[in-house]
Length: 152
Image 1 (spheres, rainbow, N blue to C red):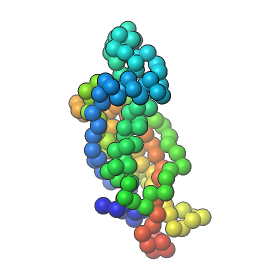
Image 2: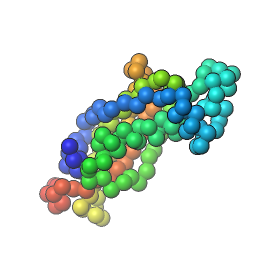
Image 3: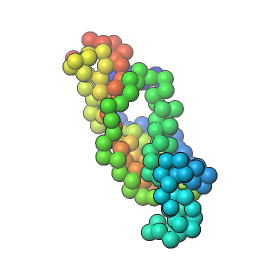
């Protein structure tokens, strides 16, 4: 489906695909972007309050962004985002965890200054294979209108 502003309805929840985290991905991401010890080795992870190797929260966010792009916005009228708010890493993501993304539409409005586009406010909810909520992100995204001027 090619998403445009008109396709989003407040209250909708769209379940997207999932990502399974490997040791190689967790360590490789950490080496490059977040080299905290508990992201780099099992031993350091075990010595930490996590009790084992865990993915960087940024790794989790990046994986969820990849899902969002592939499943929802790659073939859409997306014009990017003015930003994210309230990123919460609620539970650690570990080697072998499979995390699924759900996007909930919180609000939407047509831009007053640029009526060919609208702002869609969403909450990303990422759950692991046990149904545990591991990440939430509040997001605003710009989407072009399929029919500018048709909105009330």
